[in-house]
Image (cartoon, rainbow, N blue to C red; front, side, top):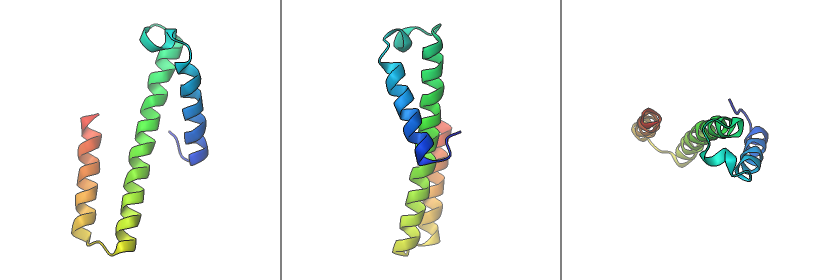
Length: 83
């Protein structure tokens, strides 16, 4: 699990390194391919959580009603189920 922006940036850098090696892209037996997929999932999870947190903060700062906050949470759940 990625828990900070520092970890997020480090993970993005590692993904760039893995993408530089073409055998990691289409070869499901490559260790790099497996790592690339795992790191991509971690990045997606972190971005979803960060986006949700940022939207909630913006909503609170702008005085958005609780109904709208509930809608934001429902949308986040719906996106998570699509994975």
